[in-house]
Image 1: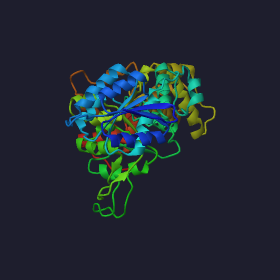
Image 2 (image 1 turned 90 degrees about the vertical axis):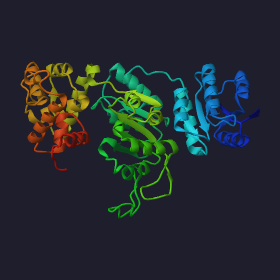
Image 3 (image 1 turned 30 degrees about the horizontal axis):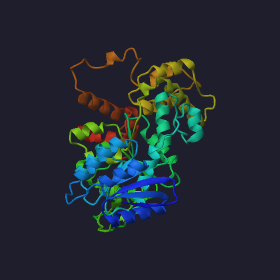
Image 4 (image 1 turned 180 degrees about the horizontal axis):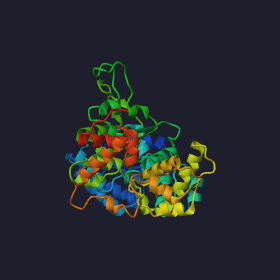
Length: 467
């Protein structure tokens, strides 16, 4: 056991029985300003932590001829019991999917395979240390707005403020973030806020709707292709990951990925390398990954529909967005915000919401959440001549084809007379006829994304034309 001193205020413990690895990692982190201690194995490691508590531990997974990783997992569990607040990053030359998952389940913050990329390893260590910091929690929207850029996020509900506080804390790190919530809850806005408040804010923010990319186009879209890779590939084309280099990439609807695409995505997230379609030359990419889904990924993992290793790779931080019905007090604020924007867009400076209209909207069930509210408000503004919007205006335009909220039940089929699929099919058919097959308008009317509508049109065999 040896001590490598350094003029630093961050302490790091490296546990590895290979002297070459010890030396290489020690030199790397000394240059980065860390004070480094090293240990050959469990006995030396506990001697070190008896003398002082490191701020982070880099732990090798094997200390014998056995390369199963069981040595490292046993030591990890003991370290977590002794130092529950100290982040541990696993590092091994015998990486496997099962070992990575077992390590993350046991409490590791990341899993790095040898040979490592210095920049990515240092980034992972700094991210883990930043997330381990205890930061004061802001209690008001005004305090949050003074500290962070949340320009387009409207609301003061305590649930939303807790989410914004979390975002403010994790945005400066490079931690992968998984945003969950129902459709229309504002997942893309949250992803943008994470990027805007990160150190990458002046670099690209690339959005990818995975639900709208077929499995045959997945590699070309995300990783690009070289000339001649397929029939229509007449020039080289950069993929989304390459375009997001040094910035952030937002992978929306990640729960819709098929198993083969999940494997390809896992590789770039784990190794930060990829090959463009038709090329055998690997490229390295430096990106912050933010994912979103309206599906229950944990349940999908249990059902075998989503890879467990990919799930643990993307959800170091999970943010669940509440449905609008869970924060009804924010509905009037959102409606007023939309009207204020529409005043300018449609040159109606005297446009305003009446107090009864705000109350009516607050009590309205909005299954399409913020997206449904925004579309309903804009439709009402377009179709109403009065400058003061009343409940009747919204009742006619927010729910077209329905006379009133109280008569809604009478327009529905009897229970048991129709399945949900049949109802969905009929509603889409009616919307397509009403909007003359204009897919974008149909999607807005139904409160879903255009790509989600495409999937349903294909599911039900409803013909459509590309816009």
